[in-house]
Length: 81
Image (cartoon, rainbow, N blue to C red; front, side, top):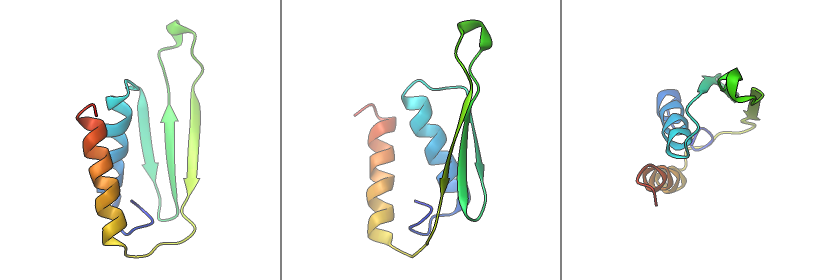
């Protein structure tokens, strides 16, 4: 979504919706103009290790068709499809 020209708030919201739909509730999202970081910090009592994933956005373009396709995918994930 970021590389297709979506606003940061839309990208952040979509990431949170998708992670929560898959039962990953302990996440934090950090966006810059060139990267997306997803931090997972589970309850330490479960013995799970925290980790961070980062994606660097190397190029951006306005691609509304691609943006719509990704948005539909997020909607399907949120609906449990």
